[in-house]
Image (cartoon, rainbow, N blue to C red; front, side, top):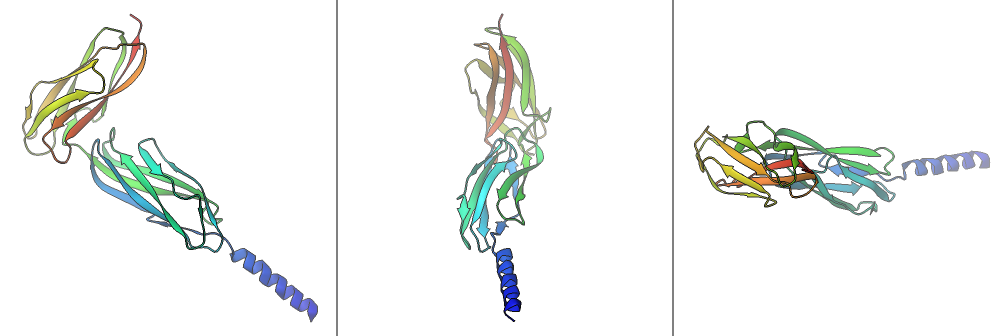
Amino acid sequence: MSRFLTIVAAGLTLASVAVAQPKLSIDPLQFDLGVVYSGAIKGGRVTLKNVGNKPLRILNIQPSCGCTTIKQPKDTLLPNESDVVEFQFNSLGFHGRVEKSLFIASNDPSLQYFDVKIYADVRSELEPSSHSTLTWFGSVAVNQTSAQNIVFHNASGRVLRIKGVGATVPSITVKPNKDRIGASDSVTVAVTVRPTHVGYANERIWLEIDSKSQPHVDMRVSYIGIKP
């Protein structure tokens, strides 16, 4: 009998060890940001909770690209404890339906790795005709100029007015050929770069328009300054 009780006790001990483990609950499992106008930053919160009976360790949380930043939660959650992952998605450079991920690694033996999907529908009031928000100038000699025309199409369905233009550095000039763009009309923007030093440059230009949805229309401008 004592041998039988020993076997039963050992079995119960093994069973208790088997069920004593951390367990990660994620809410929501995917996040739809809805419509985001190009250049806007939009974010959300994902709740992590330990629904197990052992401490849960959050080993790593990594966004799928540099366009998404996160605020890390606590690295250890006790049973029934929860915390949130705050994230922000920068829509600059994207067009159309976008899918990104937050990769989560934990010590939950049944869910060691999981990726929370983040979706966004990126739109523009003024859409570049190339459907790209990057203009590449190639190699340009220092103190020499290179110019390109960028055409933007009015996709808003109403008249838009350009209130101003700008660039991140004074060596880039931005000149639209009109300041009033009719519905379904286009505007041509002449962009001139003049490198001041040797090396790669990734700058930003923008148009300020009278739109509440997208007051700034952004475009990245890249080039390599080379010796004359």
